[in-house]
Image (cartoon, rainbow, N blue to C red; front, side, top):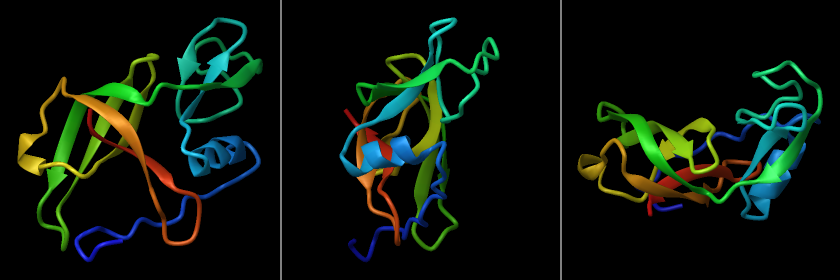
Length: 130
């Protein structure tokens, strides 16, 4: 990690989210898909937020999406951006925008996933310019 990168705390890993974090460690992004209604969702959870079914399964995501909304934090020791990114597959996830000019971020901008190391756990999916 370079001196200009924020340290990323390790995410909590539990049995329900372990497949997500294992995939992140392998450089893959997963989302959940409901077998009952066909909707994809994020954050990882066992029950479908659309229909309430427990028939959810892990499915791969392309890692591509667009910036839905963002905010730049400049009063931090190391400025950073958080964003909602809508994946090409449909779900929107809260994340960080990294390795980019914070002044050049725009709503609707195409982004792709990158995995950033954490202090003592699995890497975390974040996004950068596509």
